Length: 320
Image (tube, rainbow, N blue to C red):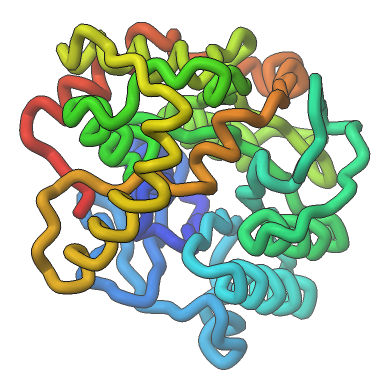
């Protein structure tokens, strides 16, 4: 009998790839759920369901007849927390509690530095997204049938920031070699690897209650990522961008572009965000050996992943 799997947040970048991965199996029947059914991925064997995961009136009935759930709800910090609270509460009340694969994030490690693995204590963060992901993860840990996946920087075709907007900045020569400002570690993981991890976590024995990091075993620095992605895009030579130029970008160019975006006159190149530069300086390395040993997951080589992503961008694809 097919396993009906409810995917919450199925209209998002990661959710869409999970739906496709489950639809390609011989055992799963994905139920793609999201607030706007027009944005949900359709296809052979895929059920579509309009669902607000933050609404307790809708969540309970949505779990009926479902054997498993994937929670990859994104959006605002309150939305992430509310969805997790309602989903885990409804699942706990269910007569047949489903296994829930919950997508957390590198952001739960906060300001930790150096190598981190699943046993690293979480000290918390005041950054809204990371704080919301931490609360949602705590809710998942209180549910006995949860499996928690912590992806790093999820790139690949259709990734809004890490593949689309970064590409536009590189092609416009507004990103490149940032020197000391981008010597932090870029904990990349291809979206296909995240989807495969979800597929395996749904069926594996003895993984409930466990946490798994998802990141390449030898991640590049952010400077290396920008250089290698620029080369795959043909955006060479890679420009060196000084600290002074970055300061001007944040103080003048970024706000101007934001205003033009609000007026509907964007030139197609996003501003460099302060949070991106903070991330580029962050020296944290995720270790993800546990999922390799427990689920046999293998990683998409960075060269192949960047080639496919660059081909997607060069073909004219954009996320907004």
